[in-house]
Image (cartoon, rainbow, N blue to C red; front, top):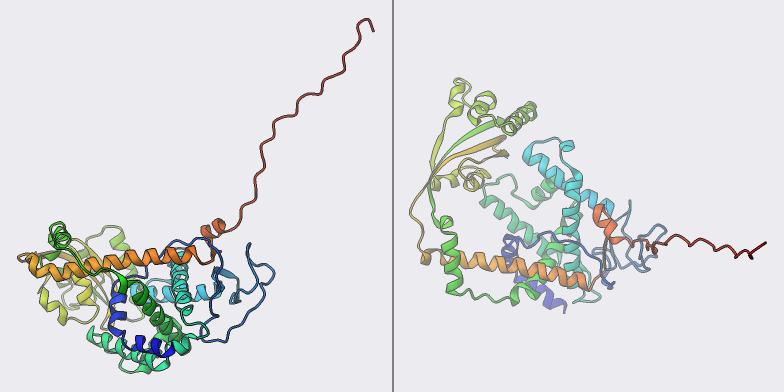
Length: 409
């Protein structure tokens, strides 16, 4: 069985990439179901510990104890600790701070916790389902270190193709994860192993079994209702604000952000805050014009940003080339729409991706129905706890009848 798993992983790079693009890791609601036993935590020998005092209602013996700082959720026989959840939330906040240049205190942790915990629960459900196929094996047996390094090499190549030149070696990749996400080398390896193993299960058990035939009537109906998506832009007209990434960047970025929230004109904000055209600030309100094909020559992620904006929309801040950028799309000049025959392949891919998302949601619900899942966080925690029984409403007691008094007494 081990050789079969290795063969599947070695043959799956293209499938993994497709699965990532499909966005099949969407958040799902968490419910409570029956218990099921699965292998212990990856990277460590199986350990069974008795549930400690203070365990959640309905707790049982044999649950793998990983709850330093309390329990966030239980999935099968695996505990997702609050400390692990906090670290995931910290990583998400660090990414937001780096991308949007906001103060960490401005980010609502509560709004981040539940979606992240839901993703962790869903990932754990898929992992346990895959590990059950190979009883007695550890995740390191199924995804060897060579496969992890090959995955990192492909990620580096993808980054370079997208214009990110700062990562050229494996050590650069590990350093980047440490600096931006606070992840150690061991944590990065474990994350990649879990990702590869869960994607292998999804392609084996779900996506690979889907009907890949898209009927002409279905694709034509999509084309008729989304014709604007197949009218390629020829030229874009936009404005921009550039703020150099230095000690004064935070205040300048906050000034632009606040101005946009207050509805101030983008041109006025550009003149006041952009650091281009030092000799003539009025040029900062310039409307730049580029052919759509020329956008690919810009540094990452500027092409992605501009291609994603619609007329009247603005974006930012986004970091590129040692600066933070804001963009506002003034006008998009479009050409002739692509014919149905030209767009048919794109349409079929989109419809297949939609099918995978639906199948992923059905898989998660199926796994929840056969696995104990309990959440101890926020409003979902209250739903998971057993409610106290409410007794019947008692009517007032009838008055006690007094004994009859004999007549004449």
